[in-house]
Image (cartoon, rainbow, N blue to C red; front, side, top):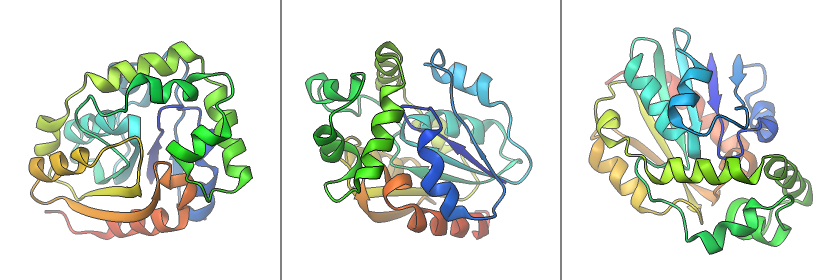
Length: 220
């Protein structure tokens, strides 16, 4: 079983490309209600994993995924972190992100910060719909929660295979996040994929293959 924990929008609308790439695999793709803005509430909403779960977190959900893996090491087969972070603050200045908090984020801002300049118009429109459907106060609250978190101690205690996937052209998560992850967990497997912040949407086939590799990795 693969569990997918979403990024900042948390609508579930953006899972389509990765679900298609995963094919017939058994997957549970999560979405969070608008009032789920803290990691404590995420943990309540998600609940404990099934036995043998491959836990995949996208960006915002990373600290929650780490907490789940730490609390249920016998149930989590592997942890895959995509464009993630362990400690805030990790975001650019508020002035840079403000265009993403509107009702319909402009395509230019999305291409520059999230999906890349080469993204097809269909993907840009999908992200606009997902982000635009979330109240601005929800996104702002999730940003504040991410900025004050620190999951390094829990991360360093993990004993299952952990795969850290970094996007080469990530404009939201800085390189510091990967450096801190390496320093926190000696057995960490880091993979670099050419792409933007939204790797699950822009590079779904590459990510699906990495998830499969993580599932087959031996436990440390």
